[in-house]
Image (cartoon, rainbow over all chains, first blue to last red; front, side, top):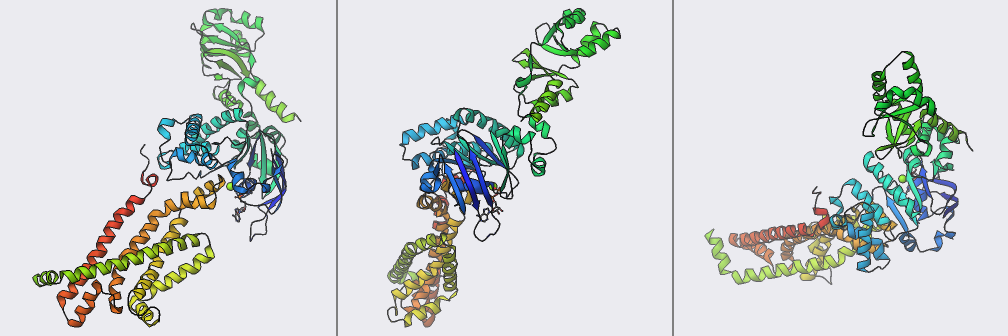
Length: 375
Length: 218
Ligand SMILES: Nc1ncnc2c1ncn2[C@@H]1O[C@H](COP(=O)(O)OP(=O)(O)O)[C@@H](O)[C@H]1O
Ligand SMILES: [Mg+2]
């Protein structure tokens, strides 16, 4: 647990505080993301937590203990610290870089070597191939991974991460984020994570602290912040697509409904009776191998039957939505995008090769409204 | 040309003797400079104010013509004619290339590397020993190389204050109007300087840490 009480930092020779009267509590096992425009004091806060700089006034406590009571080097050895520029030692191999803090802790050679391999494995790097490489031989993404591995070397309960994925391209960044989230779900470390990217904040944070000009504007869960932005600044910072961003907090399987209504091609003549029987708003067509290949809504069916459409016409209609199938772990905003792309109010949710659930536009809308309305 | 060779052969033992003195002066000066200026360079890398002062002094000394500096030292009671004055002058001239290279070698180490190291709990001694110093070594060594090459030339001028080295062939040759003598001195001094520069240059490349030499292979 990290607590800041009335913390203010005024750098030497400046009159405007870089951080002003900050009181913030980060619970054990929580990832708190500090977000805000460049220069709003995010890095300064991190650096006060591990005593890279000293606050002008106020107290910083870790697990109830004032950080000033611990020797600065001892304190830093017990806190993982990652910076955007990573700062790998260029003249040391990957293994030596990761082994720095364990060595400072006095670990034996074998123990360090074993831990290095374990961490490389954990970060998705091949130990055999990577451990003897020098930083100059790594790609940007690999460097970031090594930087994170190095910070986690002695399994510190607290990690400070200053734009840790800031220097890589969006695709690699997204993958690093996913991997780190997966790790953190098991590790449950107490993490302060700095970013200037609101999307990253929403994705990574259990809570988000929004800053501007050295002041904390709002601290809350992503959902709280998205649904109840405290003022215009927060609203602007989140952006116009606030509701769509809120959808990123949910996966399809959080709201999809089970037991989709299914029809085989040879049953198509019988479709009207079947839909009526099941009271389904949509029916999915599966081919002979059981693979879903389209859908027809109750509305469409009614209209088409009224126009006297035959089996072929229905089949054609169903096939025109052949891309309306998604995975359950997709985020709702992406699901919405699929709906717009395939011009459909319904999507089939796949579980492996089989159809498992159905997601409707109405469900998404309800989710967005409900979340906006609660609390 | 044949006169020159003849001169060299006939005076081989004295030339050898002068060369020896020449080397020993350079050697002593460089050793003292290393022991003195590396710590000074390290010291000022951790104190900007001191750095300004020390580098200013080094620069000023460097601007004094060597003959003038030798002349001044000769008048100082404890120094007088001979090796002490010569040595002191060489060490002082070495201040500029050595101190500035040590200082810059340490200063150009990526701030982020230092920041990360500090953030991991390394103390300043560990950071100096394990990061700044190893990374600064090639730049420092470039300073040593300049010092050695420069000292070779300045040592020759010390012949004016009684050093019996290759410079003496030039000064004496000038007074005696002996062209072979002058040429022998001049050529040998130049060759020694080039030799040092080449050998130390090759050595300098070897000192670059491996991690800085390799580029990404994939
Ligand atoms: N070492 C320093 N000395 C003086 N001012 C600094 C120093 N570091 C940061 N600042 C100032 O403090 C403010 C906050 O900086 P910082 O914490 O780095 O912001 P952020 O990480 O949010 O971009 C900025 O105005 C910056 O110029
Ligand atoms: Mg910053």
